[in-house]
Amino acid sequence: MMTLAPNLCFRTIPTKCITVKQQKDPPHQLNSVIPTKPKPCECFDLHKELIPYGKAWSWQKQIVKQKQALIQEHEDCPDSLIILQHNPVYTMGTGSSEKFLNFDMKEAPFDVYRTERGGEVTFHGPGQLVMYPIINLRNHKMDLHWYLRKLEELVIRVLQSSFSIKASRIEGLTGVWFGNQKLAAIGVRVSKWITYHGLALNVTTDLTPFSWIVPCGLQDRQVGSIRGLLQEFQSSTRCSEAVKPISDDDELIDISYKSLIKEFSEVFNLEIHQKTFDFVEDH
Image (cartoon, rainbow, N blue to C red):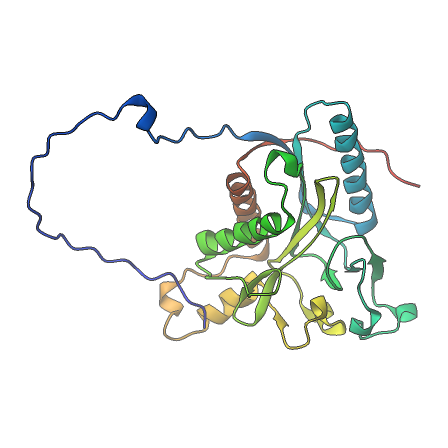
């Protein structure tokens, strides 16, 4: 059963007021924190589109090369974000094993790509929002583990703020979970401190294709979606009256998209600017 954040109750506690003569701290003792101005981030928004995996992969590599060239010339290197959905596809990481495929590669139900990201095999398809942050970690923190935890944090915040789903991490594993169900998979690559690949959040995804693989190489874990959890929650006789009716698929995608953008900008302290594609297609 889904766990909602508990309602917090407050009561007034009588207090005794004491007048205290305040002293002003000398300037050198002030401990005020000046907020850091958000850095710009260009966002290529295709969240309503189904983009072939190979095309999106090519876009990412082009952006990475552009950023590395800017750094080489000591020019400003703003962060980028691509957000989209994919046509059905399986992707494998650099060291992924084919033993986690429950089919013969020659008779694969969908295209299979072996990529340079970390992690084992996973599935992408309609109803799953995929975020590809291409950011310069020199402008944030040059620490891969920090970056992975931040990606997890933004998804956890999305699930809590938009759907009251109290998701969490599991020690020793990458991704975001609700109980034994993995809701978001994460696999990244960092080249000269520029990140690419990213995260995939199951919103209204048909989970059937996950049964034809061992997702992320984890035999004893399941895969879940936002829609599935909301349906499960609403079917609970104890909680159904407390939850508004489940939105249709398009609305769930839209809510999730807006929340992902908001939390991404806050977690990484970025100011999002929409941008259109002008990339040359690979042939």
